[in-house]
Length: 347
Picture 1 (tube, rainbow, N blue to C red):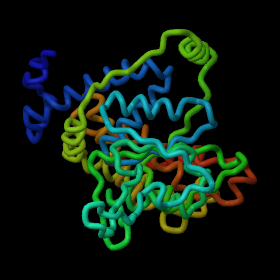
Picture 2: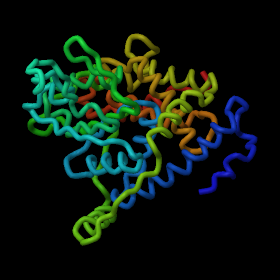
Picture 3: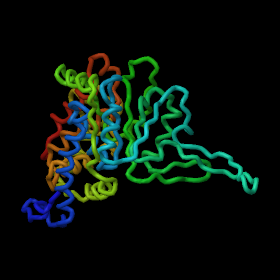
């Protein structure tokens, strides 16, 4: 495919962006369209969720998908991994799952030739590029915590040795609503490792009709790879170099800080319902996500709308609501909407 048009001078491209980087951004914009096309062969709808997954991947973040069983969370993840040509592994989280079932373990093996025994490391399914932690809240917190080091440091420690994970490393965890039987709440430390918390809703009637038609006939759609892992690594590096105005970054930080009761100016309809607000990690992810969203749209700068559009996904799982919120029927999304309405862009 000819990409020569992407090398033409563009007055909107900042001087700090090389012609090679500009071509990569153009390639990413084109790839986004193709990823959607390939995903649509298998997954009906969910374009917003797919875009958020791409943003998270570009930011080296991880994603938590919340939704009832049967809405396509697993299928969406598996298909995205295929379109990005990433090695995919799935762990089904169950109450009896052990940490070593995720990370791997040391085993004793005997050398047939010498008869000597030696300790060898047997890698677990976490050693992959795209890890689907399916129904993560159906296993106790002890096992959930086995993912903490891998998600944060991209490495796994077993015994006295530490093993690095090959990049890119991307975790998508699915979570059933906590009201369902047999679920465990995710600890705040675990939740904070996820860049986004995305709600996967029921399809519309028209979408469900297309799903039923596509899954009950003889023809089954199949997605093809669009990007290579090497290209993803280059794009991940490029995201951090996307320019952002001080005013936009200041807005993102103030938006997150405003969620902390007792440490920021009291906001009516917000702090009344909060026990704890979001950590500085939320500010980092909000700025990084805005950068990735900008270049996915073919822009070379970040604007306020990029920040606002990601506020719900970044903050939703980081706000701890109190009993007043439960009594008044207020959820995290309602609090975030109030934050976005209240915090001014030009303060």
